[in-house]
Image 1 (cartoon, each protein chain N blue to C red):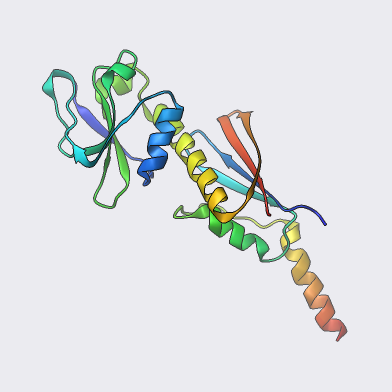
Image 2: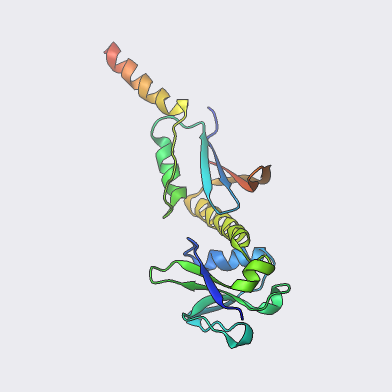
Length: 64
Length: 138
């Protein structure tokens, strides 16, 4: 199983970005929430992995 | 004649702020209840500050730098205008304080939430150096 890795990048103004590897579906939301704290989000985009579990669930529902 | 000016930050935690300044080589003085900030020529700031970097620690500066909480609890930097223009105590300097602050805050959150630290790297980018912190889920 792929290790779940979190990379946080902080620029010279104290702005940070969060990159998640090995996460699927909503699991990344909790991590983002942990590190976001009271900060506001200015940009958010989901990787392909986010949709992987959603698609798998839909396929399994269709097979039933 | 110089005067104090206030520069906006988003920092709210005194401990991380003090740790960030310490990391940058300063020995900040803390007055949690707040203290007056007096600068060059007897100029003083109109609000108390909680964290001060004495002038002696700021190479070539005319006045100490203060960080005082505003009415919402956010720290605002109070810097002499001549020091901001001539000694590098400007927005870029304050950005580096914010960068060090955010690193401290991130490490503390990771520790509290049980993430496993995997490493730190400074990445050079056209926009300046970025600190990269890596964690794994336990």
